[in-house]
Amino acid sequence: MLKDELPNIKTELPGPKAKAVIARRAAAVPEAIKCGYPVVINRGEGAMVEDVDGNLFLDWIGGVGVLNIGYSHPELIKAVQDQAGRYFHAMQNIITHEGFVALAEKLNAIVPVKEKKRKTMFVNSGAEALENAVKIARGSSGRPNIIVFSGAFHGRTMLTGAMTAKKAYYHGLGPLPDGIYRAEFPYLYRAPKGFTEQEAVDYYLTRLNGVFDEASPPEDIAALVIEPVQGEGGFVPVPKEWIKAARAICDKHGILIVADEVQTGFGRSGRMFVSDYWTDWGCPPDIITMAKSIAGGIPLGAVTAGASVVDKVKPGTIGGTFGGNALSCASALKVIEIMERDKLPERAQKISEKVFAEVKSWQKEISAIGDVRGIGCMLGFELIKSADKTPWADLVGATVKEATARGLLIENAGSYGNVIRFLCPLVVTDAQLERGLAILKESLKVSIEKLR
Image 1 (cartoon, one colour):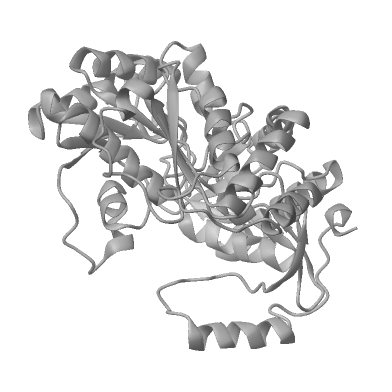
Image 2: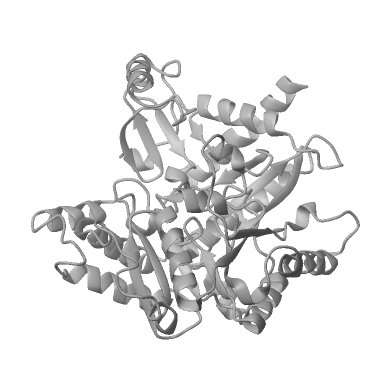
């Protein structure tokens, strides 16, 4: 079966059939929607992809965190087929369907926001979830402003574009909405030189408090919106002591915390949510946004908040046509069932231990590996040119290309484009994990030699 296969490249890339489809794409799809990989999928199972020319790729991108349970899980296929045989859609403002309610109930039970009585709304994507989380925070608090962070990525809409740090994504598309103020993310690896970890945490907390003096008084801040592990920003985790202190600051000023778990959620961290760790530390968020792996590849996003928070929002101000689509809800309920039954968060932790130890061992012979970090299976490693931590983005690009040629799909990340990120489906086999690590190491070493 494809899900048990190993990478096997049989043609030049792209192969002749793939090349033809890619040419059609270039003619039919805007150039602004980039695709840098020579792969046209024919079918996928588990962590493996077969292209239209018969080449087999091990996918360690997983739709950028969408495929935590892998491609084409048979139980997921059946759940969606069964729902499709009854009805595709029931608009949430007109007709209630049972799956919509059941999924909201399930998320209210497992999503670790601060308030024990919770309510959930559904949308179609991570960006929509963030848009509505901001609306909920503003509507609940009566305050206009929010705080976001350097390195953040929250989506591609106009509001989430303003929230996202990297403005190259929005070149020529402004003006963007206001009321968005940016603090410095607690990026310990790139803290000022000579700082201990605690000194770095204190420094970043000072920078957060500086927003109140330099941008907006705290009584005008509705929410602080933060990724528990930055995705596009380089797989940088929020330090424990920082988030504990930030929670205290927000409680002091009546500011809500929104955890953007669009990429971190649903098993990848070794828990269902990184916010589960935050809860253990005594600093849970008030609102959590979700998408990506929530429904195994069918578009769905969600926002879970404390009932006392969301019930202050005026009726009719949040919602949408396709939110809580019947096929999406059926898929999400099955995804969560599979994750809990098959203990995929625990599997994520075991995969993480293997990958982390392996990449850390490479540092002894590959000085370009500057930092290895993450939480659970949301791992990244940062590539540098020298001991002064100069980012080496060209090395990442070359390594991605070399790995693809050998049948391993990986992706870059980071504000400097110098991080290789690990978003492998959690159903990857041990043999695939071993082969992928071997390909990655060889690709990295070959790329270093080419660039020297």
